[in-house]
Image (cartoon, rainbow, N blue to C red; front, side, top):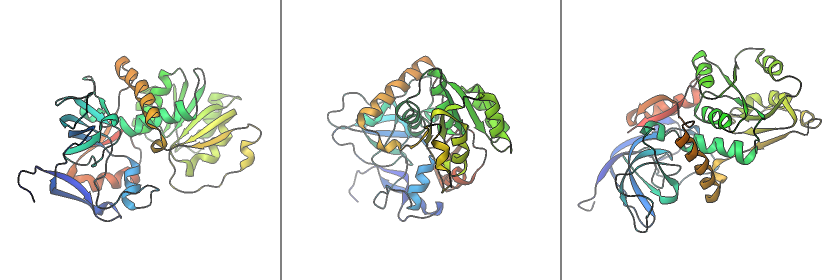
Length: 329
């Protein structure tokens, strides 16, 4: 190893598999920013379900091994590469992507995936913006093309993406309904933009939603667990209603006839399909939310780097999720 190289702690994955393949090393070389890149001293990094799918090797996009997981970091600019004009050393920032991986003490990122973090949000909240809020923007604004006055059901509203969706939908003038399985979760959903909330563990909760929205049905459903809920979703929709599938962990049987009379639609989304220009549009919408004050990430469980395997276990198998899971670096 060349002398003078700075070392850091980082999680490295050398083979795909269960949470046990996440290895904490303390001799990883700190990367050096190249043209249009910045190096960030990481204070917190968001943990997202997609990172568990990538780690297991079952996702459609898998990185070459070895790699460090994590895209959503928040921290302080440590150094900048050539031709970086938007940032300088010491700036508080958050990211929507990293080059070198976010589960580490330092992370390299391309300039256009980095955004200023306002002082009214802490680093944990900064690490909770990336995938959750940009996914919610893509689902609501880009795919569902919501209009003020429409109704939206956030099916699974108490997690990171769900709460982000509630906040954005309320800010854009929608009638917001949410579901959550715990009392704490339902309370937080109401505090973050929902007009009404339902317990999706209750046997008759679909009937309660139908009663609440009346004959017209729901215009848009943002679906976090389609393999469980999609069939019911189709029965809840209004004429021309649309289900946006954000998450699914298996298969489900549906009756296509349920889409016909209502001329409803089912659309899947992937944040990673967004163009650079779309990311900039979402960032502009979210920047307004930070300035006005409706964008307020709710932090859930927090883990040190040493407990990252437990974090990956809990984000998939834990129940009654409330808020956004983050690693504290």
